[in-house]
Image (cartoon, rainbow, N blue to C red):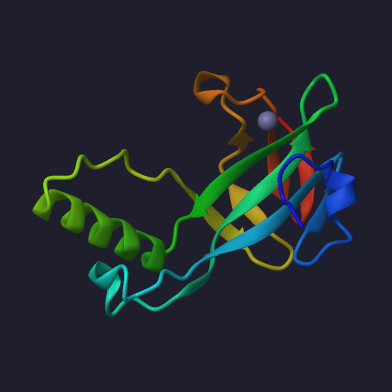
Length: 137
Ligand SMILES: [Zn+2]
């Protein structure tokens, strides 16, 4: 099934999505590249919880999706390997991943707040994930 374009409450019954309440739901995403195609990641183990996608509703009620990376040593190792690979091969390197602190995994609490940034095409949704619930900012 598709993860985008669906309303948060419709996603919750599907594998991996967790309801946060207030028309928000999240799903962890993993990092697990094909090492044959991406030898620059040799020696870095797969990361089952690399970040999370957060489904929510825009002010007009239509579905929206944002994503965050977690502030974990494994995430920084991947970023460093990507940066080294790009610089060594003359590939422009994108911006640093903004990362969120995981204060608790179960139930999930992240810091700081999450903003579906209008400057980057987001809908302006803003709030916190605290103790597994969505708390509006
Ligand atoms: Zn949004």
